[in-house]
Image (cartoon, rainbow, N blue to C red):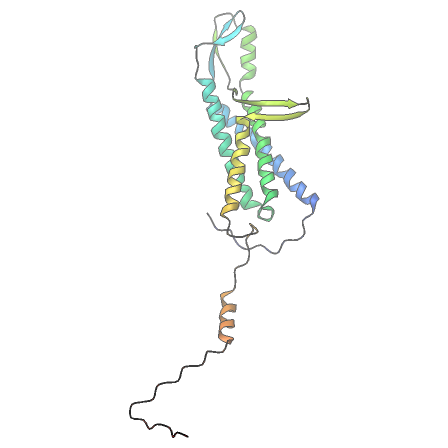
Length: 227
C-alpha cells in the first residue's frame, strides 16, 4: 500500500453541517460520474438483433447472448467504478477517513449506478423506438443494451430501491474502503507525526551511564592490608 504524503495536523472538532456537506458533495460528484460510466457501458455492450413482427419486435436468435453480455459488462464496469471511487476518496479525503468516508463512498457509488444505467440504455433507444413503430414486418434491426439482472423498485411509490447488479458499485466501494481501513498503520486512519529520532537520542544521552564493574587485580599485585 502506498504511503501517504505526510502527517496531518490535529483534527478540529467536526461540525455536523460540514460533514453532511462533504457527504452530499461526494454523492453528487459520483452520481455525475455515472453518466460517462453509462456511455462507456453502451460503447462496450453489444446490441441485440431483433426482427419486427405484427406483434412487435422479437429476438432474431432463439437464445441471444447479447443481453447476458450487457449485464456482464455493466457488472464489471460498476465493480471497477466502486473500487476506484473508494481509492480516490481514501487519499483525497484524508481528514474524513472512517465512517464518514465509507458512507460517502457507498452512497455515491449507489447513486452512480442508476445514472449509468439510464444514460447507457438511452444511447440508440430513440432509433430503436422509431424503427419499432415504422419498420415493416420482417425488417431486422438492433435493440440497444439494457439490464435484465438489475433495476429499481419503488418502496411505497416514493423511495427508489436499486437491486441486482446496480448494487455492485456500492459493494466494490464498501469492500475496498474497509480493506484500506484494515491495512492502515494508524489507529485513527489518518497520518500521524512520526517520533523524532533526534529527541530520542538526546534523552538517551542525558541518562547517567551504569557504573562499570571493578577490574580484577593484576597478577602479583600486593593485596590490601586486612583489618
